[in-house]
Length: 131
Image (cartoon, rainbow, N blue to C red; front, side, top):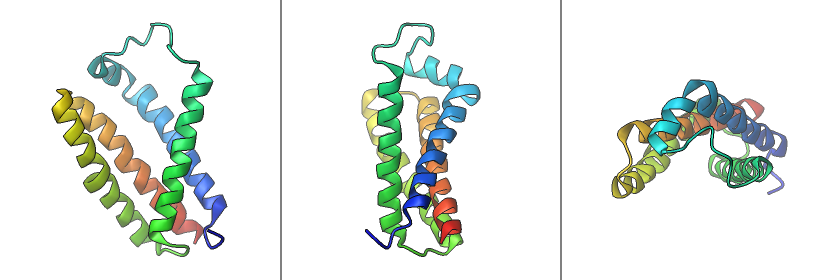
């Protein structure tokens, strides 16, 4: 635990949060809402602070796990490669299984999987550069 760069982990978690704001905001909000069956004008079921707090905590846990996986001093290219591999082969394919059984659309899978692919690639960039 002490060998991990906690500043880099925090920065990686923040990057996922910023990416999510762009990805599920101006880039794909309308398409995501339509495919997920979410009415963007409907009142929220939970307070936004709770949603964003949980999202940030999950990003922090994911960044910490990724940092453990790549080690305390990863080469940037190896860290980005690991992020792309994890994002696609583990996360996106796991989503694919769930989305298939839930009858969700390919478009929704592409939006959600694309976010996580970039999320883990960003983790690799940040953790690799902070090394």
